[in-house]
Length: 226
Image 1 (tube, rainbow, N blue to C red):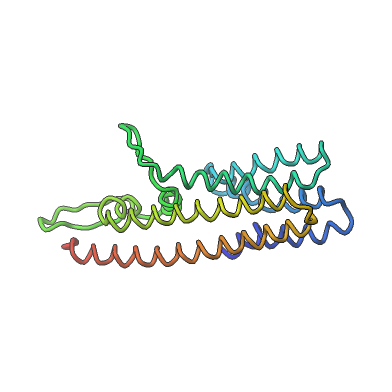
Image 2: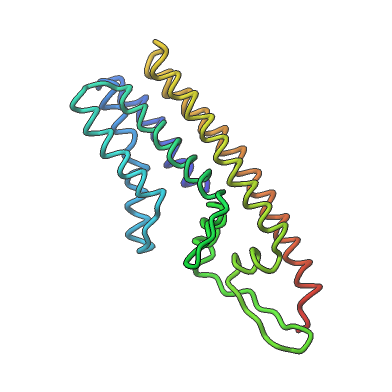
């Protein structure tokens, strides 16, 4: 997490302030967006899996690069980050909709991210009172077996991410479009907001994960007869 945060937040900020002394803001902003772009590509090559959020980063970077170079407007690059924030916030929000079909159920985005993280982990195994062995993927076990708390925390987490990301998006757009604040100050302010949102929600995510593990452990004590 520390390494990813450094590449996504710290390195772009350092690059921007280093490059803007020799190049116009529009090019400094575009170059500062390269590290997160490369991180997405490296993840894809290494894991051989398509990351939806990563694809959004790539598309947003390419589109904003073309628009910015054509227009020469550095604020168009700043709007790239705002649109990315809004899109991710929208995905978190849409994942809260209670949609169930014969083919799939819509589940909170934090649950889907957890599924991806635990994809290579072993299943949760337990034995019932008759000695019958059961196993389920960890995230499905938390969702279907632990049920109430497991689902509640994921809905709460996804709602939190959606709210804070949209709040950040609104502030970014207002600063970019409706003010005459210099580009470098808007970029710095946006980075600070991103850090606050990520640190706040990551802390809350860690807290709820610890709580869920304790609830899962309690469930195993009550239901595992191995």
